[in-house]
Image 1: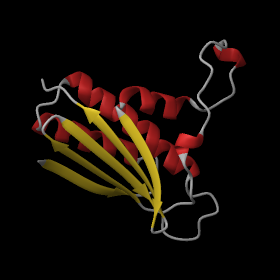
Image 2: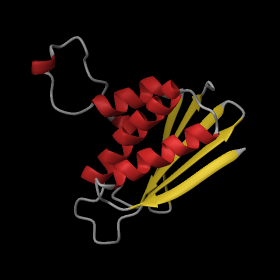
Image 3: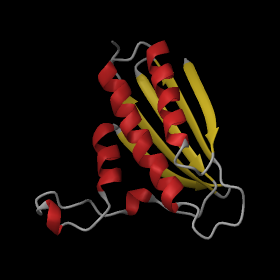
Length: 140
């Protein structure tokens, strides 16, 4: 089993550090380039949303924690934050048949996450949002 964890601040500049961590983890675990790209896409969507919306009106010190674990061919990604309670899985699925210019802004991020990952679960534990994502991966 291989695992990596890191804590990020509530700053969009952290996205590049997040991407670097995912790339190094993927390379060390011999994941395919497509898998690393998919992981980065998911992490970018989830963490950018937490940074942009999770701490509105928040009085504490924002913290976003990422843990990636690979056991066999099962990748588990946990994204935890201490922001306001928000279950992204409650968002309605976007209507992809509506022309782009007629769609409301937002809603595609969690659709992308659900499309890339095998399972996605949300829980609120100890004052923290916990998004747990699983994906069966292929190696390079």
